[in-house]
Structures are given as structure tokens and as C-alpha cells.
Image 1 (cartoon, rainbow, N blue to C red):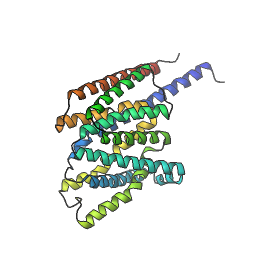
Image 2: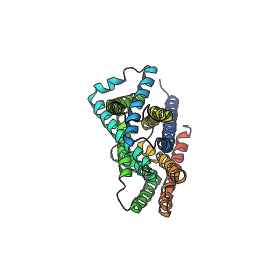
Image 3: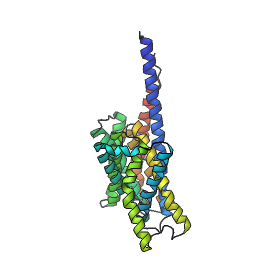
Image 4: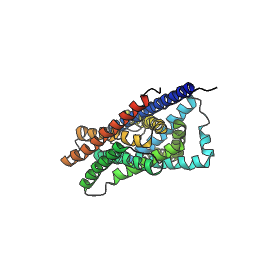
Length: 314
């Protein structure tokens, strides 16, 4: 017969397991955002290649890379995800959203607007948090609400400073915000769903690459050998952080992902300003001051929750 002690042990084990999953999810998410944050350097190395061509190679080689990993790991039935109508619609949507996001991001890097791209990824967490509250009914404590308001103020300041609609920032933030939401709701195997997403786009990308090869206008195998290598490796450099992100999105609240996403635009901002001499004004300093204060408060709230979870059950 179960005793009170047994129930306490089971509850303790459940809490520890949840904490372990949460920690792993946080690690995956942070890793993804760090790699995304330094990607502008990679795309800058392909500055001589048109944006559309880079996107086509990014999609095509991502599909090849992910499918090979799936086959190697024994998950050969990943295409069965398409048999379910709900999965099929969701994967078509996520594939389209990530395709638009990739194109806009590469285009921003190519026209020297990394700072505006970083602004998009500063806005994105706010959209993720908003979607978490509105759709998933997630809750924020008092400190997290204050952090959210401060972050919004910081984003509004930098948006106002632009003096125009920052379309690059808005496209990046909205597409990736909804991508994360759908990933969270569907809760599919991260690698399998990524394989299907890229395969759905691969025929279009492959056709584009083939047409360019026939016309003799493509860079693949005709430009410098390093360019060809970078185009091929763009599949791995694309798929790895997406896989990490999907693993994180399954394990932690969307609101936490929203705040962790500030890692990527911060790195992008530093790369744009320090590495490529893009302008950073006093207005930027003020707005990012609000954002970093928000991050500090949110981190404080997470530390308090972790301490509460780690308390032994007596």
C-alpha cells in the first residue's frame, strides 16, 4: 500500500526530472542563439553570391544534411509525419515561415543592415512572450511583467529612432515568432520535423540551383573553391541551431525562450558595430539599456524559481 513517504519520494523525483528537462532545454536554446548570433560572419564570407542563390543552397543542403542524419540514426519513417493532416499543414507553414526568415536575414546582412536585423531579433522575444500569454495561456510573475514592459520600452525607443517602418526587423520577428509557436504546439520530434520542412522546400531550391547551372550564372562549382565549400556547409550551419532550438522549445516555456533569444541579437549587434562599423548611436545605448535591465530582472526571477524547485520535500 502506498505510503505518504512514497508519494513524497515520487513527487521529489518528478520535480527533479522536470528540473533536469528544463535545464537541458535551456542549454539547447542558449546554444542555438549563440550560433545564430555569430552567423552574420558566415554570410559575409559569401558577399559576392546573390541572396536568392544563398537561400537556395541553404535550403537544399539543409535537407540533404538532415535526411542523412535521420537515416544514420535509424529514423527512416520520418516522412510519415505527412500522413496526418494537422502535421502536414503545420509543417508546410513552418517551412514557409523559416524560408521567408532566412531570405530576409541573408538580405539584411548583404546590404549592411545587421543592426536592423538584430533589432528584429530583439522584437522577436516580445512576440514570443505575447504569443505564449495569448495562445498558450502561460503566466508571468510580477518581476517578469516589469521585465517585459522595460524590454518593450527599449524596443519602442529604437523603433521610433528609425523614423520609418523597419520592415526587415518586423519580418524577421513575426516569422520566427510564429515558427516557434507552431513548434511548441505540435511537439513533434525536432529532427524529423526539420527534415520534412526542408524537404518540402528542397525541390524549389534544387530547381533554382539547376537553372542557374544550366544558364552558367551560378556560383556553385564555378566560383572560388572556398565559396562552393561555404555553400555546401550552409546546410549544417543552418540545421544544427534549428534542431537545438526545437529541442529547447519542447522543454521550456515559450516566455523563457522569448527572453533567451536576446542572446542572438546582442551578438549580432556587436558584430555589426564592432566588426563591420555599422552606426550605433546614443539612442541605441538608451534603448539597449532598457533591454538589458529587463534581462537582468528576468534572470533574477528564474534564479528564484530554481531555488524553490531545488528545496527538498520533507
